[in-house]
Amino acid sequence: MNILLQQVRDCNACIKHLPHGVNPIISASIKSKIIIIGQAPGRIVHETSIPWNDKSGDNLRNWLGITRTVFYDADSIALIPMGFCYPGTGKAGDLPPRPECAPLWHKKLLQLMPGVKLVLLIGQYAQNYYLGERVKDTLTATVRDYKTYLPEYFPLPHPSPRNNIWQSRNKWFGDEVLQALKSKIHSVIN
Image (tube, rainbow, N blue to C red):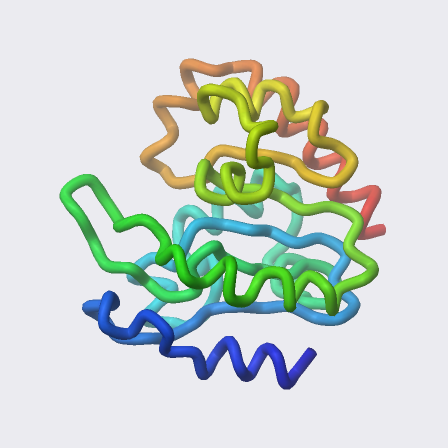
């Protein structure tokens, strides 16, 4: 696993598309029980080289009901984005994750984590890639129908503060989905 992680961290397959340079961000272990597949690192994560080290990460840890210590314990949780490097900013926020990363690295990484019990799919890029034709017409519908994808996958919206309006419009998410998520996380980790 360490050799593969170093290969990912040394990757520069899409350097010409990255205005801020390469800095692949990943955390994983052969012992990981949960994999969180997000979109791509943001600017702060790119600068600190710590996955989910921003407001979105704070929200995600709150959703999961776990501490930073548990979150960053790779033997418990692997943090693997769809795109490993910060893609830069577009007109309406960060650009999408680079499409090269997941096909290049994900299968190899997942094969080295035989004890994984749950994969969280955060946002439409991860959901489209992993759920394929099983994804619903909208992210809202996919998340609302989360039970369909269990026990293997648990789809979630992105925990960005930009999605606070979505959460206020979809009370069922906090009332039902987050409660089920916390219960599932604790049953896997403990």
